[in-house]
Length: 293
Image 1 (cartoon, rainbow, N blue to C red):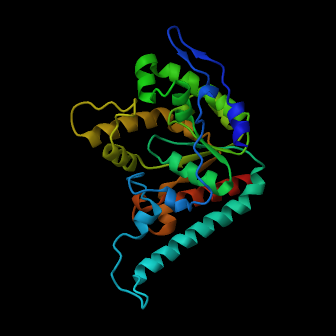
Image 2 (cartoon, rainbow, N blue to C red):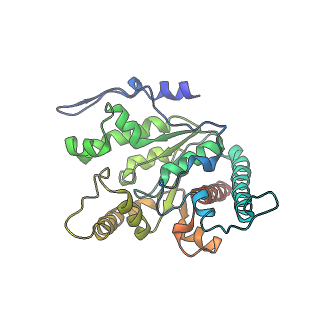
């Protein structure tokens, strides 16, 4: 499967008036795939999402020191049981939906910082799909040049052209989970390619996105240029502007996964308490409902 995907991703040489991007098949690492023997929650670390807290980091917070007769914290055992239950639910739902997918690709769309990569890796693991990040593929095709540097050197239009070609090539394949860039939704032709599979909009409130992006820094985010003043305020204002430009396009997605809705269903106070495993479960539920329509 992996060799077939790599061979199929042989892109034509991308050129501009003064720059040539190497063919994608020159790269030795076209994808990120997690080993099957690792548990899903071990893929997550406490720094990956600041506002969508990792499963283990969230569930073990504030545990009491009460112990069982085996000298293990009773609350820790309860928490681990909770983790196992979520993993089992994720596995059960993936097994139910896998035959219905018929090999169709899953495209994750959403604003920058919404957790598409983390959630995509979880979904690809449980569905036994390959995982691709479209931004990473563009970087690899550009000889390792970062997205921010591609923007600086050649402009957003040039980046979007390459993004469209990547999505075109991926749309010809099957059994892939693809994390797209936040702006991939702005071009109608990209939707033509993504509608060959199932698109999933990860909807995260802007204030939560601004908190996360401010905490981890925005240097790698070419569309978040801070002016003077408070970093959070500047990030929130820029995200709000991008949202105005893109919110209509996100409605083209096959399904919507709302973190506010998940938080409400779980009875937690805010979206920051929702972990990636819970988001992945909700994504599978929404995909299942979509396929039943």
